Amino acid sequence: MSGRLRVAVDRDACCGSGNCVRTAPEVFDQDEDLGLVVLRQPEPPESEYAVVREAAYNCPAAAIDLTEP
Image (cartoon, rainbow, N blue to C red; front, side):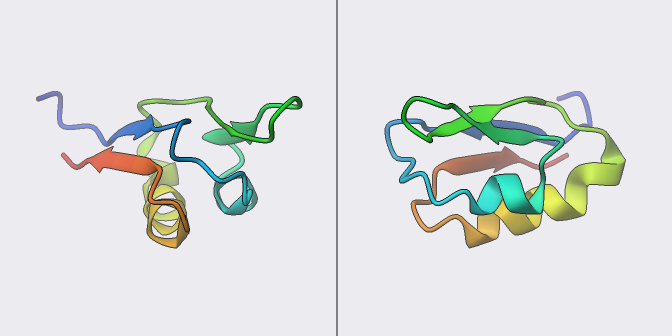
């Protein structure tokens, strides 16, 4: 394990609420066609860890998976 937070998303589970994008726009985006999550940074910098954890916690579809360091 590299000691870095790793992020994965499940687009099949995503409901397109956009909470992740509003919370951590440097890490998450939404595609224009379906509004589903797009992962911009699978290993974000440590400065983004708190907002990524908040985004995962607040995802209504539980579509964000975190592997903690």
